[in-house]
Image (tube, rainbow, N blue to C red; front, side, top):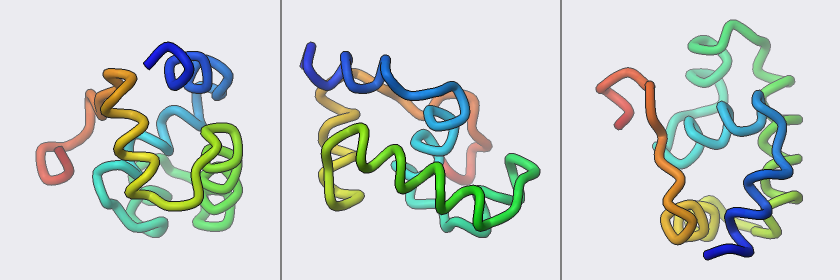
Length: 80
């Protein structure tokens, strides 16, 4: 838990935003639209999130976030 929280603490604010969307199952294109950025930028942030969190799959990322108590707060109801 604390290791996961420590990893989350190393993420930038934007990376945390992208991660919140990723763990809901949103597609890169949807994330880009909601954040007002281009899809390629989402891919870069998503890649950095996966690297910094030390995971290789979204399922792993979801489990790690769950263990750390990280919730996708403030997202539209269709994704939470």
